[in-house]
Image 1 (cartoon, rainbow, N blue to C red):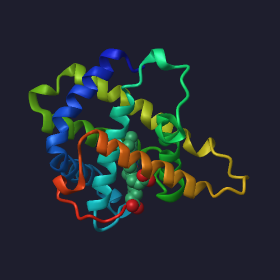
Image 2: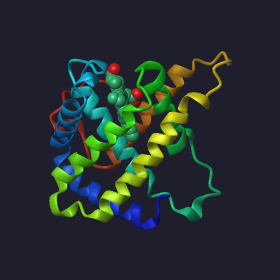
Image 3: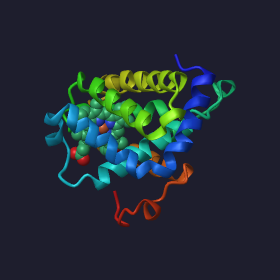
Image 4: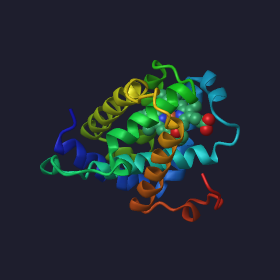
Length: 190
Ligand code: HEM
């Protein structure tokens, strides 16, 4: 379960990651491919866009934690619906990128290692517990992704899933104050 204390710790520690986000993304993939060299071939040769997309998704997730419990009756647009975005993300991982469920453990390890390395003393036991908790919920939701979309409709589910995910990525990045120019990425579309 993600408590209000967890949410606050994640948002506070994320603010410390934002200024070093490019280095953090580099470290994360470096660590992932050290502990699981066989995952390198799952990713494109040029990792620049992938790093940017991961940071945008994390920024969107952290921003979504702002949603107060008292707002539970409010309507949420599909583009802002964290659950829908994460389910679609999970479905893309299974169906498009052919990610095995067991790889979520190694990604958790690389993420926690990166936060520990990047945040230093600010990565306390409580902060670790908060990130572990949010990652566990995310991974479980992503793994459910394949079971939750109706593939029998004539709608192109893949396109919808991609569109929802990418719009959310852009908004999340903007809300976190991360822009492509500042991170040194070329101004290309995703
Ligand atoms: C909480 C967990 C994860 C998050 C937040 C995440 C986030 C992302 C994002 C935002 C993308 C960009 C493309 C898209 O939006 O569809 C992506 C792509 C990808 N992710 Fe993940 N991911 C997670 C877990 C994993 C795991 C466990 C693996 C296993 C190695 C993995 C491997 C990949 C690969 C191979 C791609 C596609 C690269 C490409 O072909 O362009 N991800 N991920």
